[in-house]
Amino acid sequence: METWFACRRKFYYGALLCIDGAQRGFSVKLGTLVHRAIERFHTDVRDFRSVGADSHFGWAATLYARAQEIVASETFEPFGSTLELAAAMRSVKRLLARYACELEASARASEGGFTVVASEEGVSFEVRASLSAERSIVSTDGRTGRSCSST
Image (cartoon, helix red, strand yellow):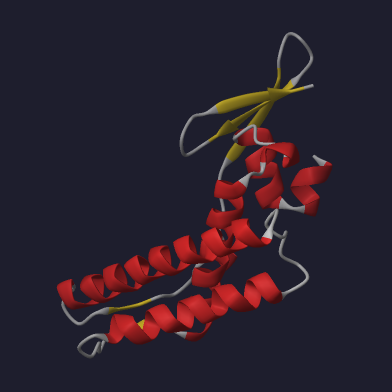
């Protein structure tokens, strides 16, 4: 339960998804970077009610700039090498450009657009924990039903 109180996301990855720190490879770092960039983007840009033509180009550039800021910060777990970082940033640029296109398409498809009221800063999830016959804690993700036991 210490992990739950210290960092709910770490608890979610460790206890529910059974991913420990040693398994955090390239894909996980890449996904973390993309999600953090999107979160920072939506801290500033929330109103998508009036979307101009080709807005996604500007959004993609802003998203990528946020990703670069995150990589430059000391709080981001670095990639293993310069080559790995370069590959990651190419992937990040492509993924964030795709996200910006989907964002514009969603705004245009919905009548009157939309406003983002929260992004990942407000992530919550339901967790049920129980003690198994083997005296290990069994955590169950209330959304997916996936269980994981820890000793």
